[in-house]
Length: 354
Image 1 (cartoon, rainbow, N blue to C red):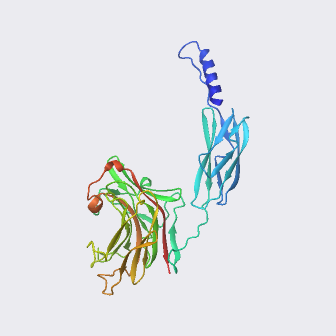
Image 2 (tube, helix red, strand yellow):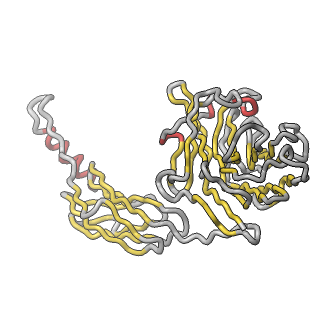
């Protein structure tokens, strides 16, 4: 009805014109909102906003957790009632859109994160640190690595500190691998790099990227690093795009370093690793490290008591998230640039200790 009215007015005005250059079109409708932003707590409830328009208007939302009424206003003024459902997850934002003729305006609705009871899947551990990525940016506990292409493992990407490669929204961290005018960029992020943790249960919920050449990883390195592999490396989860949905857990030290033995490494096919979130975890004590995929054991590496060459894992380590492109392993069968941009999405990272 609104559109047809504007169209009719436009036709009548153009019919009154005396020449081709003297055509007057109907002006856009004017929408006035009493507020452009509303906030509400996790429990939800009802919000309201006043709308005035120079013509009839309609209101709607595309967010399933919001409801708005009335959806169509007969008059030029109305009070919108916005019903918000309870939030049990991350902080979220949605929009109520007001439409009148050729004009649009919107009200941004922000709801606080819901309460989450976080417990360790292994008894005897308490949560000591976590990031649920409920805000709109990375917290101060995270540090970016900044390095050019080829810095390590002959990888083809540059690690940069830019918003486009590490985005936090709707409760997840997105590490984006992208081609920026011929430069491949990505992020490598460290949690609590200066302190780390010694022993505990560490896990992350991750959805892996697709495409030959991608090399996502969730791993740990020592805070007081002096040399590799002598100081150790803990690879909780790695995957390479040319071998999709096959996740690998590995340890590195002087005694065991890329030997390919069942003592130091194990792999498992997770058919939906690239389409769904899965939990990758590792329990680390003075005696052993046990790696898990969705709560199922994948690999146990034991401290054999022979010293640092086999067990440099009695010092603080910090977690790392990164998405590489190509390189010694990721590029072993080449890369497919058509898969870019690619994204490694992280729902949370958690650290528990006894």
